Length: 484
Ligand code: NDP
Ligand code: BG6
Image 1 (tube, rainbow, N blue to C red):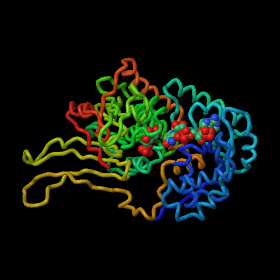
Image 2 (image 1 turned 135 degrees about the vertical axis):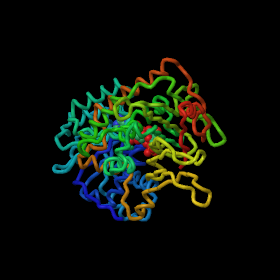
Image 3 (image 1 turned 90 degrees about the vertical axis):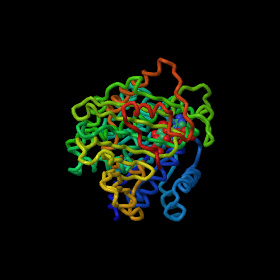
Image 4 (image 1 turned 30 degrees about the vertical axis):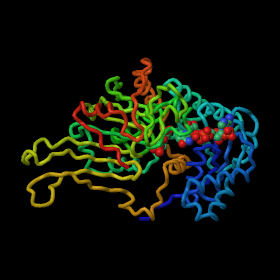
């Protein structure tokens, strides 16, 4: 199957933080792939901005290396890579000073889409927004992309929204959450609202519970300073997992358009109950035979920051009252595996003999590493053993079903950057949505923050603290295995 590429209009994209990790690992390699696919034309321009004193040639060389390192196929496309690099230039600007902006302004052409990607620490967002304005760079056709973390709590998120609103309209602000750019997350919309099969069952009458697992095998790596201030709840649950929860739980939007989608997501967040201490497990990884512990890796001896969190959330609305949503995420777990599992109730009555086996169906929406959807159904065990029931998966791994070689399947960041150029905010968060997510997160954090409580230790490479298993066991349920 060959997917249809719809080219975007010609753009001038400025990446503040153009030499940073995110730009080198995700944004520029992603743009290169969009260039290769023909979605980005050769009239468009990319301008990297950072303080480091580099000329265009030196910057292009940084980006060439970054793309070769982060895109395994790039080595076979050196000529295309060189053509792409001619579209890339560099401006040295300190976002906290006034110089260099006019020079950059000269590069912004009339008649193109202007986008400014704030791929820098959040303390600079205010500076950049204000200076873009003062240097006459803000007009109707301008968009800004704001990276996470969007605030540290409700108060700071509101303050940031107010700052941005001084210079930009809401329709110009693209608050990025790369989980919304993942193929399966969008497929969740197609699955729920493009099929008759699931929606009638999508409620507490038929769904026993939902599990959301985002397990990472990596540790905090070189991001110890950031992570130690943040922890798993703020780093993953407030944003990525909250978005997954909204997509799984929202009512059908009036249309697949930005405001209809965001209105429905906001309603879900507003219906979330506070999580009590009893429904919450925090953990921190310890050294094991597999790898080092959090305290050493992050370089934060004595830290009580959680690298793992599990919690039971409840949505108090007509659709979901009585169906808990169990969430867990953590670093240095046994595998990198993320999925949403919708666990259906058992049939109201079994006609089969006791002991023949009885299961509820499970719909597993797999985000990574292999994107796809799996439906566990009950069938008769083949053979002469009588009526014994077993579960088998109806598996639709996208790569198997659609044939990977022909699909233009962009990574989350590149897909979202193309949406920015198109001006499509459907997969971006609105200001009120982010504030509501922080309001709930703050309440969860306050459950432990005042107690100066240590997170529970778990071995690097395990499934997290045993107490997280108890969170389910005591309700007579169990987590699905973390398996890549
Ligand atoms: P890095 O620390 O790797 O890069 C920061 C970039 O900002 C560098 O290019 C740096 O260059 C530039 N910079 C710093 N200070 C200034 C300044 N005063 N004026 C102009 N440029 C400046 O950060 P990341 O790339 O990792 O992260 C960028 C943003 O993206 C952060 O908000 C982060 O939270 C977010 N993010 C990152 C992810 C990742 O995987 N890396 C994932 C999700 C979000 P120089 O020092 O030369 O100025
Ligand atoms: C980032 C978090 O937003 O998402 C990281 O800051 C995390 O800590 C990353 O590792 C996970 O993204 P993905 O796409 O690899 O699951």
